[in-house]
Length: 315
Length: 94
Ligand SMILES: [Fe+2]
Ligand SMILES: [Fe+2]
Image 1 (cartoon, rainbow over the protein chains, first blue to last red):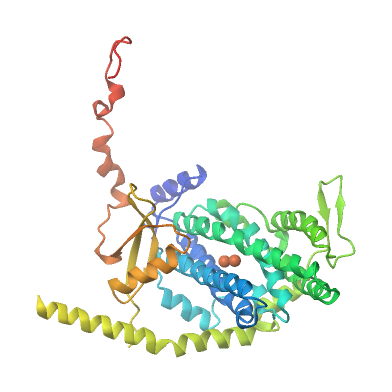
Image 2 (image 1 turned 90 degrees about the vertical axis):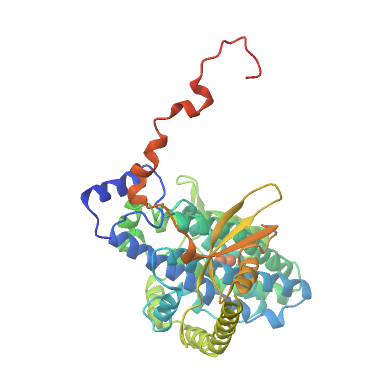
């Protein structure tokens, strides 16, 4: 939509007064592009994120845990669908977005390129990864783009169970045998820094932050959200009786926050650009699921076409 | 055949006595599958007692560009609101 000055003024009047932009409103082309990219990458993350946990569905330690994990992974599929649908309101098709994912032209969250080696990893993902996701996502419920904000409201409601079930799974382990507790500690050791990296690079290096703030897409800086996450999580680790793998983590009375060690951002960039432990596996699995499912989509479409034709002939 | 399944808009009635409200959209090959998918995508936690699905392409919407011209006629008809009328304070139940 090549906006006239008048349209641009109307757009900023809405954004500046904390209003919502709706699909058919005039909007700057760069705003539309940024949103499509962000919503698509968010949607991709939700569906790729099913894989690390899906790995443990058939090996969950009890029927209760299995039912919970199934429900959680199903929720993540749902989150992907809400977000693809929200992106489609801007005139792109879901097929096209999947194509961009499958051909490495769009990315997904780096965190899902780490492996789930033990059952405790499932707990750590719920507690830390979903916890970090919630911290990032709650401000998005007030995003200036209406369909994105509404999708995020639904998602955030569902995420709170994800985090709690993870915490509970870890708590069960830490109250168990010494080996179970060690397994929980090991999971925390491996997932802590990748979870901190989920908030993205430091604000001073973040390329799109200022513009996204201006547009009301982003409300808080990466550093502020990362701090918020550490402040919430550190006391929870105490309750679990686990040690966060950071010798410099301590409460700073003056700042009213925890001091902590930043994640390795070089690693973050390496993993984002394709060189994490599981990038290839995740993409191969995704593409295979899509390709091998093609006949189902085609059969359903053929059946629908046949029935529509019959109904037409009968009319 | 690689044509994408058509898009459907989903409306959910949360409880008896309430209207159906738009909750989002989804892809499905036909109306029946759209309903089933809508149940799985939008009502996993008892969010609804009834669902409508409507092909997105069948929806006709007013244009945001004509917003002013389209809705202005209602703006100067304050007499459509009860507060427009002056009634003595002692009159009750009116
Ligand atoms: Fe999610
Ligand atoms: Fe989640």
